[in-house]
Image 1 (spheres, rainbow, N blue to C red):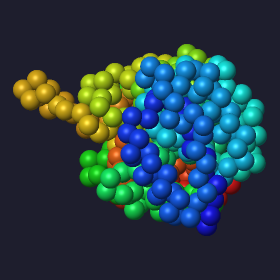
Image 2: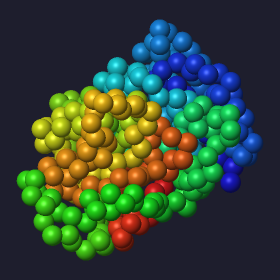
Image 3: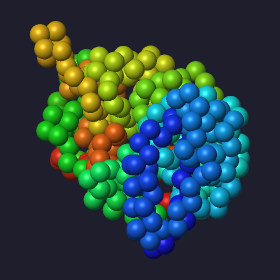
Length: 321
């Protein structure tokens, strides 16, 4: 199904131009009409152009009438321009059918838009890192992208790691573990939100973090040691954000190294276990999303059902147009 895809760069400068070009060609090869923003390869310091240039790119994406507005890459830069974004124009574009898709630093844009307008965006791939991979796009990611772009995607599922299944079926409050509950549960009609953990934390105390109650919060990150992940989660905990959620879903936390002889068993599993002891929310792990090749697409801001049957987990959202 041929679609109009608008590619722009709202964050860091494109460093790997070969990957960018491969990504564009791959999307064209799938039959899509690909429009590249005039400043997509701009450079200013480490950014894809100065703040005004990147802000204009966001607004051009919103005015493009494209079916999909897809970022070239993440990095850093969107938080600098959040106050100047015309959120009404972006929300109008979403209402008219443009799906804004991205990952990593794009979380800042997604959270701000959700906080200001309630508009739904998509956590998903970037052009270079995903479509421009030397080995080709991941099959699952590409299939999920096709589902999203055709309006056919209604949910996603994954297998919970064995420890996570235990976390999911136990209610641990105040550090005291209760008897295991049934391993089947549903959380219905909850707003799915989240993204990159470090970016989320950077928005605490600002008008750009949505006040979601009874939500399903998903998080991921890259290059963050588990102690830093725990520190950020503790920040969200102390800020009262986590207590408001019905579920916290861990995506992929990649590219970090433990310190032999020093961490002494402290790991991401330790972080998850401690978090579960501090919140009433269901805590799940293993969601295939993050800075990894195999990533599903997730409708940020959409009403969603989280269903768990044993070690099978599902996020279901129906059609999101």
